[in-house]
Length: 249
Image (cartoon, rainbow, N blue to C red; front, side, top):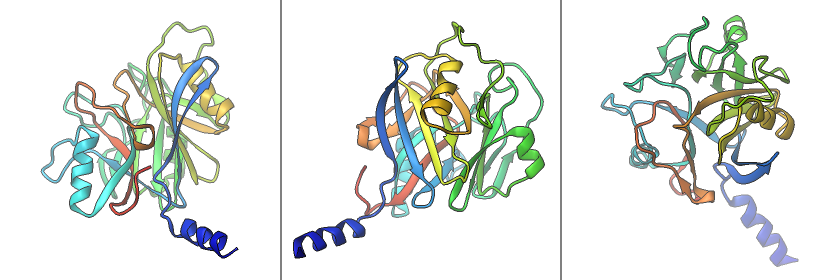
């Protein structure tokens, strides 16, 4: 009994994991899925370093955090960007707005309305459809806009076709109703928008989900022994920040 009680105390003393990442097969497609508990874990957005240059890679963020006694857990690219790595849509980092909200339609996936915004607040993360975001005007600590929305209030984006032939590696994020659960996913193989949106709505049970990007999609998931490098620098990146003394996932 004493051993069992001691073991329980040790478990309670262990710090929370930065993210729970796993691999799953859903409807014939493989995915890496990472869940973040916002009541226990700290999600943050990253774009520019102290010199004003884009981080571009997960390793550079890790180096910067290490200098402050922190480390990077799970991480993923988080929104579309221009050639200079500036965000295409709304972007806020630690309360500083770098790009205002764009609500008009346009070319490419970003302009395939409705698009949306991932808003990070104290202890929660929420995906908002852009017009709802403008109407409610939540005070986000950090935010990134991308598009299209994958799931809007429980419904797939109206322009997604079940028989689409457009297939890419894709990544995105979904959140639950109370904002305490954020689930990030990246496909292992090419998938359609309909398949990817269905993953968040039907398999993960999330009412709202947002597409981040395709082809350039990358993931850092230590517990999956994965740290994608890629051939070019990324723009906005989202990741879990933890104390450097916490164990790897």
